[in-house]
Amino acid sequence: MPRAAKSRATPKPPVLVVAAHPDDEVLGCGGSMARLAEEGAAVHVHFLADGVGARAAGPDAKALKARRGAALKACDILGTASVTFGDFPDNRLDTAPLLDVIKQVEARMEAVRPGLVLTHHTGDLNIDHRRVHDAVVTACRPYPSQSVRSLLFFELPSSTEWQTPGSGAPFAPNWFVDISKTLERKIEALKAYRMELRPWPHARSVEAITHLARWRGASVGVDAAEAFLLGRTII
Image (cartoon, rainbow, N blue to C red; front, side):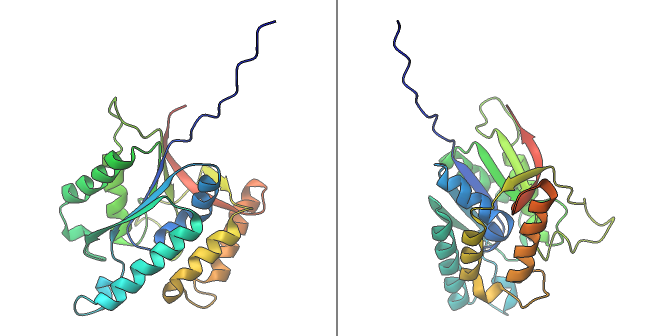
């Protein structure tokens, strides 16, 4: 009888999360990041803006250092392979030429060659989120040598649901990731951004974020989930 072929697990393609600000990655897809990392994928994160520059009259080196330190801690908790930072102006990404934003995303994609990219939904209230969405969609255009097989858009508490009807595209999720086993890791990572958390019933409170994960889970029959809008996938 012929010998059975040895089973070889197919390596998982790299994952790239492109976020406007440090904390968006945990809020939007932290549970999925942790699950993907546990399953053997190299998860990379790139931030385009600092998330603090719009809060002061001028550059605040101390606040920037603290925010980036929180990002490194949170991403370490989630098991990411790398974290990189851009320096576009916070909450002013619409003042930067879109081509410049696209080129920075393309540079990270060239370095990582991801099979899966996760980023912001187009209808968010925050202008930086919308700008990043546009840049990522452009950078992920499906030319023949494109590495990206799947493109997912996440929701951001205190931005996605705060957009008013008719002012932006509604978030209508059609892709769910079961994070029942990684929700606690998501919340642990979120607490690294304690300066960004708010008390209940703010949408960016630990309670609200946990409730959202439970509700998204209940929507598809699991304990906890993160919801996405599928931009494209190739099977």
